[in-house]
Structure formats: C-alpha cells, structure tokens
Length: 392
Ligand code: SF4
Ligand code: SF4
Image 1 (spheres, rainbow, N blue to C red):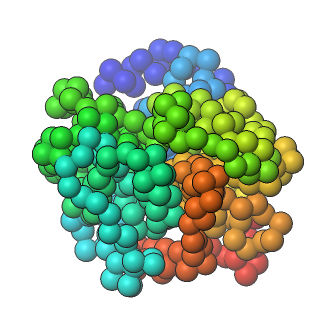
Image 2 (image 1 turned 120 degrees about the vertical axis):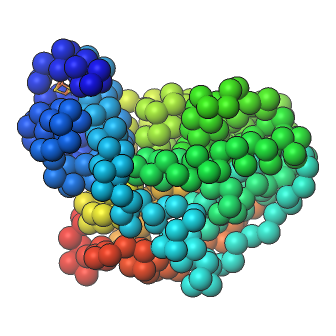
C-alpha cells in the first residue's frame, strides 16, 4: 500500500506526534496501523475510535506525516470490513438512531426555527448542529443577515445533511447520497454565495464535493469569512462597545484542516471594546469533540474541553468565542458544571450582541437533551460523570 510505504520511508519514530496528541501515548500504534492497513489484522477497535481527527499530530511532525493520515483510512477499512456500527449510523440521516432525529422526537431543542427558504443569491447552510442543537448559532446568523440587508435564504433540514461528519466516522454513505442533491438545490435557488456555519459543512462544499463534481459556480465561505466581508463592505457597521477580553477557540477542522483562522479574529477585533487575547492560532488545541470521541469517551472528551477553559483563563479572558457546532457543544458542557468556567459564545452570536440582539440560550436543556439522545442512539453510552467531576 503506497500510503504505508511512504509513511514507513519518512517516519523516524521520533514521537513528536504523540507529544501533542491528546489521546494516544504508545508509539507502537504506528506499527499496528501499518499492519492493519497492509494485512487487515493487528489492530484493536479502540486504537481507531480514540482519534479526534484534530490534526495536531500532522502539524507537529517534522516530516509532515502524523498519525491521522493512517488512522482515517484505517477507520474506513474497518467499517468496510465490519459494517457500520451505531457510532457511524448516529450521524447518518437515513438511520433510525440518527441523533438529530432523536432530538426532534423528544420535542426538539426549543423547536427548529423556520427560516426563509426560496431563491436568493446568498444561501446560509447552518448544518445539523446549528439547526438542531446549537440553534443560537443559526438564529444569530439570520439576525445579522437581516441587519445587513442581505437577500438570503436558509438551506437546512436532515435531508440536506452535508455528510462530512459521517464520512469522518468512516461512513461515506450520506455524503455520497446527498452531495448531488445539495448542489442541485443550490443551483435551483440561484446561489452566488454559500455560507456555512460549521467547519465540517465548509469542508464538504469547499473541498470534498468539488473533487467529485468539479468547482461549483458559487463561492463557498465559512461564516467567519462572510461576517468579515459584511463588516468590510460596511453592511454591518459596529458602533456599540462590548467590553470583554476574549479567547478565540480555533476549531481544528477550520484552522488546521483548511487554514482559515484570520477572519474570526478580524471580526472580533472589529468590535469596539473587545480585546482579543490570542491573536494567532499558535498553541491552539482540540476541544475534544471530534472524530466521534464525544460519543464514545465522554469523560475524556470533556476533560480535553476543560483544558481550553484553563487556557482561556490563564490569558485573563472572560469569554470563549468559537465558530463550530461541536466546539460550542463541548466547551459549553465542560463549563456548565462550574461557575468558575467561562461563558462560551458563538462568533455570530457575539457579533449579534454588538447590535443589541441577544439570542436566548437554553444550555441546560440542550445538554440534557443531547445526553439523552446519545443514550438512545448508542449502545452502552455512559453519561459524563459530573457528580464526581471525573472529567475535570
Ligand atoms: S509520524 Fe512524524 S512525528 Fe510521529 S513519529 Fe513519525 S516522524 Fe515522528
Ligand atoms: S488527529 Fe489528533 S487525536 Fe488523532 S492521532 Fe492526531 S493528534 Fe491524536
């Protein structure tokens, strides 16, 4: 296998990938991954399920390798051989145990908002996380689009799931089923600009779909990029101060995955009275949510998220700002049990506040329903051990 041969040729077993990895410690994993990819044996499922897909290992590797580039194909291989598990199907919109379906069956987190859905030059794609779980993200964005006078519509609903999260968990089915349908719907609406909330959806439209269907005839922007543009074009004119020292949490798939980290910082620095503590992504780390780890190892996942609260507090911040549904959920949950932890705010939500638009949040209800949904979707789901604060 060419991938393995190249890795073997370049890897010096220096261990620098493991120095930064929040999940693995054993350098022997590299040999087990080689063996599994070449012969189909020699790996334990936990070897694969623990990866956050954060990309820190690749960034640290002097050869530009890291472990993720072996783990991701190994996950796909395992699923191809063993079939889909509940961990994969819980993010498949066609599956009965899809987490967003479970949330809707429970009554929905403060009801999924109904947005404009007709033809428009700007189409906002909140993705499942901002549509069903972190609804404040989509509400804040729509409030800002209205404020800026943008001619927009919203493309949302499980039937349009971009499929990126499922593909990351080893199940490419939803991506293969929905990509063409999503592109056709954008064409039907006459989209000139597509704006996504989550980095996963951004990657799907910006990077994955074009590899199959060619370059789209619309521009693909992540919300941080579009908000910066609206400010630069003076469609959003910031006058009212928000006095906070803020910490920007870089979502892994946006910063390390796609190299987009400047725009969110520019938006924050445009808000009068706001002081940004971390002006570059240097030292950024994972929130612990990704790669299915929040579902399979909740305590560990939330312990990693607590680390981000500590990093923000060490810089004297009073707010954490981010722009990814998974990061929002995990950082909010890690902060929910202690008054000492910081408030976590979505980038669009923060900007909306600067226009006097305070989006109502129901974090407790959201976390309760999400954990209930995990229990319904996954066999043997273990609730995070908040009673003993095991995850701190
Ligand atoms: S993958 Fe890179 S960082 Fe990890 S052991 Fe090999 S050379 Fe070192
Ligand atoms: S992607 Fe992240 S969790 Fe996975 S091996 Fe690399 S550093 Fe570790």
